[in-house]
Image (tube, rainbow, N blue to C red; front, side, top):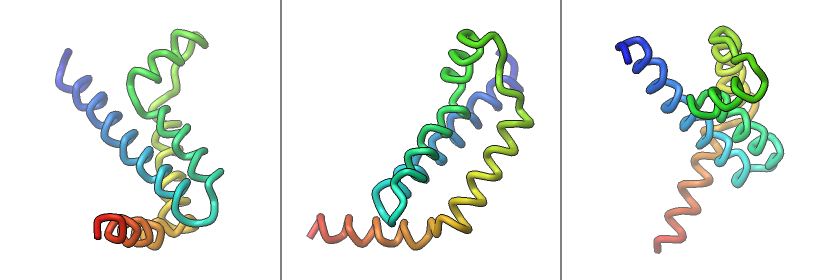
Amino acid sequence: MDGKTIFFKASGWIFGFVVFVIGVINAFWGNDPIFGAAIVLMSFVFIPPTGELFRRITGFGIPMAVKIILGVLILWAALGVGELFDKTNMMLTDMKQLLQ
């Protein structure tokens, strides 16, 4: 594997994990579990093995431009409309209470 491939695969794993965590936070804290579940499902678009599986099943892959646009929309929705920082604060408060 060349350096470019390693970079794209690593960034796919990292961004996919970040989007997955955003989805989990939205699903369990706040008032919109369906939105969170949808984000969790969309996180698999960025993870390289699921992208390869999708390509094998359908015969075509998801273009990088589509992944970038989807990623921007997910971040915009989670940070703006989804109030991610407020939900993260609720999650941390719940975790502190569990540990006490």
